[in-house]
Amino acid sequence: MNREKDQLKKLLQPVPLPGGKSIPSRILPGPMEGIMTADFCRTMMEFDLLSSWITPFIRISHSTPRAVRLDERLIYFRPLPIIAQIMGTYREHLARTTKILSGLDGVIGVELNCACSSNTVLRSGAGGAQLRNPEWIRDTLLEMRKSSPGTGIGVKLRTGFTSADELPGILEQVRKAEPDWIVIHYRTSKELFRSVPDGLQRLRTARELLPKTFLFGSGDLFTCGQAVEMISRTGVDGITPARGLMHNPWLIRDIETVCRGETPPGRNVVPFLLRLLDLSADNPVWRNGLILEITRNIWGRESEFFKSLAREHKAAAMRRILEKKQTTEDRGQRTD
Ligand SMILES: Cc1cc2nc3c(=O)[nH]c(=O)nc-3n(C[C@H](O)[C@H](O)[C@H](O)COP(=O)(O)O)c2cc1C
Image: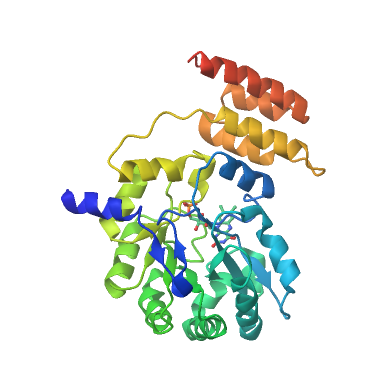
């Protein structure tokens, strides 16, 4: 019990990185391409729901992007410390990009994505496809390090391409590059987002294989209970909840509260949704998808609240529904 308490308290400590930089806490948002829009990021920061970011992947193809282009990709995430994630197949461009990124405002580290398993990415040989070639991952990390010795260098992995039996071979090579951290999403590339019964055991195996490397666990962290279970059953050093933020935007702060031995308060998500709506509505390309996604996750597809929002396509009409919901939440009433 005391061991678990100590493990949880440790999650609140910063992680030192090269160049005197550090990650402020060991609970980071798992990157989500398409979800971490400017509006989502701004709302998360205005509500003070996290302490640092790992960005969704920046795709690097057969050239090195100019600094100004890379800087544009980081604007949403400032002023919090940023781990910029890159993905590609050309080692020299990944290394040069790392160098440019490491000189940009707020960047504390660069992470190589070897986990993304969308068909397009796999077909291009990037992301999760690199899990079939652990030596490539090792050598690319070494080049990234060489290009930017004063910045944290990390890697995001899955536990294999087709089978988790590949994990020891992958880690054996990655370890040789001495990354400052490894994030492991416990599924294989082929498993996409399917449920895997032995996900935590796979992270446990990674821990045993790499007792000294800083490991972040990823996979199905929707609640504080799941976070505590991952930490205590696997011994990973940190966690990166992703989709859980669309079930509870306060998830990172709630897990931190549990780590302090306290109980998280009840959360009212409506003000968060209202702010997200207002920011999105100002956007010339107005999209209500994210608001609907969060509402569906929290209240359910069958709830009147979700159904009434889903019928609306105009921001003003959605706002009226949210304000009505806010009033009933304030009165402590449930409407569905
Ligand atoms: C819509 C979406 C986009 C994602 N984009 C990225 C990405 O750009 N980079 C990355 O490393 N992981 C990405 N992921 C994976 C998540 O960071 C995380 O590893 C995965 O969802 C498992 O964690 P979870 O079950 O807590 O969501 C994405 C996941 C989703 C659902």
